[in-house]
Length: 323
Ligand SMILES: [Zn+2]
Image (cartoon, rainbow, N blue to C red; front, side, top):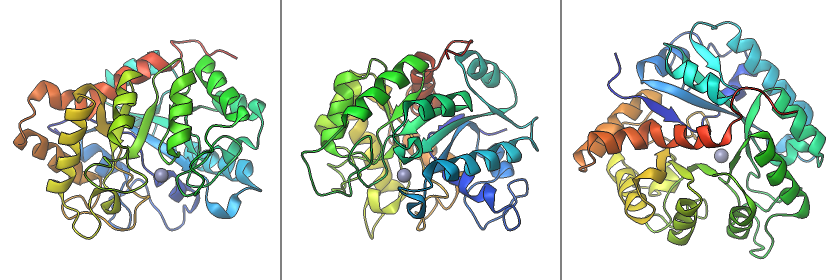
């Protein structure tokens, strides 16, 4: 029985579901970071599965590729109905948390998949998508990613419409990868809490993917959560360690508060790993570290799962699905 219950707000494992010949999700293997046996072993109670739109499908072909990923995801899930439960509503979430099953939440990483159409957003929602990372690192129809060097562009007019529609439908807005202007533009108009599913603290590691202290406080003010990433470059390039990652946790707790802190490891999306965090089974070791840094059991429960669950309960539709 795993000692901790963990919500992981980001992994790129679904990208492997397409290559079913060379990837077996159902058998423990060490070629990738996540598989079903290791999810269970690690105490994961809710795993976000991102459908990451690869560069080669941008801007043309994003939607078809997204649907291929989604098909691969559902074909994989059909084979383990007793182990994983895709959640669409707060009712599903609660039911899943009260069962032995691991909840799974579908997210799209890259607003290119919308191909500029709100109708596509609504259809993706009907197909089960419950979170959207507005951008990856580039500019797209919705907003500007951190890889662009124009600091003045942010959320576009279409991006604003997308946020309003996501708020109405009950979809979680994910601001990982968005630039600073876009981040604040979204916070100004979103009527529900948002998340930054995988990033760290800029004060500890000055990387453009990490959040500055004013961003962390703004995230707190909208009752959002940041999922701390295990990507070595966002922790401390060249010297990343569990201990250094714990410095990020402590800093976010001090700056934004424990209620706004979570885990978004980015497994199967990162090439290099931190020693001790080589795969999803390392997460309990990270949580042990929180305990050594003085967080008490209730605080640890908030960080490992309660904070993300609180946000999902606020954002997802209750039980019926709005059209
Ligand atoms: Zn990412």
